[in-house]
Structures are given as C-alpha cells and as structure tokens.
Image (cartoon, rainbow, N blue to C red; front, side):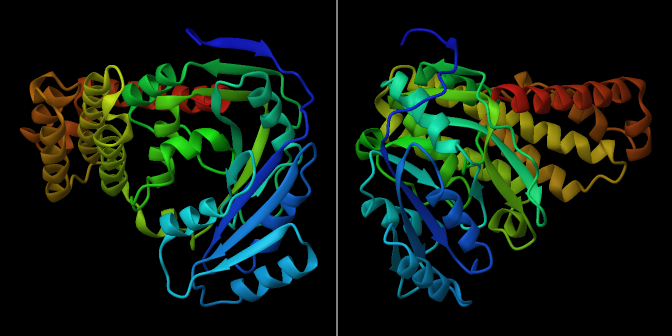
Length: 358
C-alpha cells in the first residue's frame, strides 16, 4: 500500500480462527466476563488461553472452572510470578489461531468486535493490525456501545508508525486490537518493558505491516480501577520515560534496519523532549512548581533533544524559571500559552475518539 485509504466498511467477514490470550493476575472477579466476551463473538472460531501469573486470589480456580465448562478454554498456570510480558508471551507460544487478541482479564470485547476487525483484515491482507475505539469505564454497569462500523481507514504501516513517532504517544489502549498471526510470527512477542510493552509491539507490527482503524463502532471495554497496573505505578514522568524506552527498544531492535529508522527515532525523541518541557511548564501553570521535578524533566529533555534550544517551549520554561512562581503564572504570554495548550489537548482527545490518532 502506498497511501492512506478510507473506504466504506463491509459488514460481513469469512469465518476465521482467533486465539484470545488473557493474561491474569489476581482478577478472579473479572475473568469470567472477559472470557465470555471472547467466546460469544460471532463470525470467528475462537479459542481462549488464560495464563495465570501465580495469582494469590482465586483466579486459577476460576480459570480452571471456565475451562472445565468449555473446551475452547485452555489454562496455563505459572509456578512463580513472571510479570505481564512473559505471561502474554507464554500464551502467544501456545496460540493456534490465524488471528490474535491480547485481552487483559479486566477488559472485555464488545459484541461483534472480531467480526468487524476480521472484515477489514480479510479485505486487506497486507494489514497486520486492526484496531478501533475502546470505551474506558469505571467499575459498574457497562456503558452502551456502538456496533456498526461505518468506514475503515487503512494506512501503510510505516506512515502510521511515522505519525506515532511525530506525536510520541501511543494511540492504542490494548483490548481493541486484532493481530495477524503470520505477522507476529515474524516480528515476535512482547519485549521486557514495564508499562509500554503493548505500545512497542503495536509500533513493531506497523514497521512491517499495514494498519487499519475501524470507524463508527466501539471495539472493546477497558476497565479503569485502582488495582490496575497502570493506575498503581505510572506517573507523568515515568510514563514519559517508558515511552522513550519503547521507541529506543523498537529502533534498536527489529525496526533498526527499516528505511528512515534513524530519522523516525529522532522524531520520536524530539516529540518526547517537547513533552518533558511541557510537563515542566505545567508546574508553573498550577502555581506550585516543584523544582526537583522541574529539574528532572529538564534533564530528560536535554537527554532526548539534539538541540535543546530548538525544542518548543524551552525558552518559555527558562523564562518562567527566572520569575517568581506567582508572576510566571499570571504573565499574559503564559496565560495565553496555557489556554492554547488546553485547546490543543481537547482537540487531540476529540481527534483520537474520531480517528484513533493523536
């Protein structure tokens, strides 16, 4: 594929085999709903692999009950806790399907999710990853979902990758993705990253296959709760550092040899440098700047940027540092910049909800 396509969605898909890998650690209360959401999918011959990572609750017992009740469910039980990356990779090694889903045990696929994703991937054999809009929700009743795909956006994978490098952000939550097994066999499983192992894998797939987005429908429910790994352990600085590690891992690994790898890597690092500066500036926006945190972010920006003086916002940050916190917050130029940042963020959120891109 040489350029982005946007085409009207075809509603039907041919039957296909799909393995849904569900890594599980202490999610006994959520696991039955995750498994049911996979097994109830239409237009797909689904099998489910639950990999229990030495849970300390009843997760393993629940998984085995589900397997006893349905032959399509298999269980892998770790003898010791191995972490989320190895847990998924162990499930991946046992997968049999032509297509793959990584579904966290606290998330769910929406009805028809696989049918919609299979339709675009079967129509475009060059697509290695298809995703759509996920609904983020807090524990409780499931929000209503949209079930009709209106169109598909299909990008050459490296164009989609380049856009992610320019933004520095991950555009995918996780459960809304369907992967083509033949592509994953080439690029491999997840890499040992603490929080951005999913992100790095999506980027790696895009380096070697095309990417599709399903517009108009909601493809998964993503549960947000205090016990989730991301909620417990990720703050803004760590999120930035983890995304840096994802891009570094990508371009020092399988994608090192692709065309423009060096320039794409540089673009990603430049985007992250600008975000480090913006996080530091926001300390002044709040009126209570933490100089220790600001210095950490400045050091991060310097480590990422080829020319720190050229990083958007750097001069403004240095100007704020030279002022009192109160004066920096009230300065007319800084007020205007704060408003502009807020507008850009709201536009980015709107764009992501509509197009799957930041």
